[in-house]
Image (cartoon, rainbow, N blue to C red; front, side, top):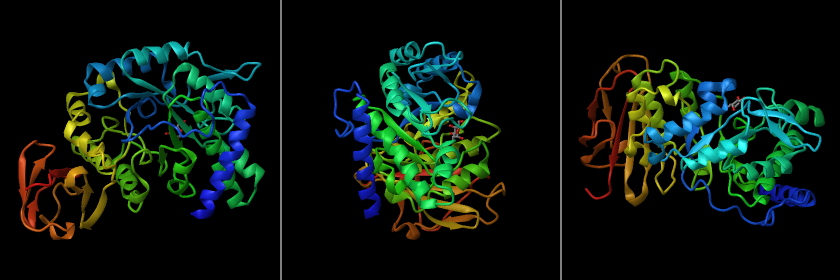
Length: 408
Ligand code: GLA
């Protein structure tokens, strides 16, 4: 770890010099600490999971309108994030322009801001983005300044072609050198963003390579993807959730593990699967970036995404990521410590039987709890009292989520 920290300081110093030599218009020095953003996991909506490369300016405006109309904004979903495929070509001065799907980015940002929302954008440290559009390689300072001029509040930076076109080409067969190049690329954009003086959430997307959770915060990362891409499929969602085990200690206010954007309401996920997916992300203190078709959202999906008490678990001020304490058969038991000594317990029937083959008996002792525990079932809203060995009936892929406050 120590060597990583020393390395990061060296890279930051180097990239600060580079940024300064490109004369950023910023009022702040590149070394100034970034203002506090992402003190709780970022919440909002991102275009990729539903629209992918088809997204247009109109879809972004519609999403902004819907966040307001559905009450999602007031429930905390404030970032409207444009993912890949907005990028056009660079002009003779290297300034990047949006493509014909996005006629005027500043006007779009103003529109989103006028709805009391914030706006996010996407790029890559490579020459091309994952969908083959223009990336930021060698234009980091210029792009960061452009984002600031447009009024961007959030930047997702996706590794994509940087691997093949830079890491592999510059350091063939030399893994550690390749990783250094990757670190430097993320540090460089971090410095460029900071040097604009505009607070922007900085989201790393490099699929968890090189234990990103260990070094991302020192390079200004507010969140970092821990895995490859999510899809609207229970098995994929469950695998990603399981892969968060052991990463708890890296997460906290200002810097979060990101198990990828939500698929709630997408594909053919059942109601139970949507509920369990949302519960798991709340237990994980994960960023909550909805990715569904907001203008056509069904009421039961809206009810999941706007369940304020589940959101409160995700957004808890302690910022302590939950843990999978134990599994038995097809059932997993997660626990999360919350501010004020409160607890959240989630019991998930992850298997494929409609009900667990044998009744599941919850062990409070395994959670370090003794005696009856009274709390609130956050999906029914009812009071629930759990005893040692409590028999639970959970449908296939369904969840029981209970909040227990400290004074009982
Ligand atoms: C990668 C990312 C996705 C999305 C696409 C866009 O696959 O992991 O989240 O941004 O690129 O091309």
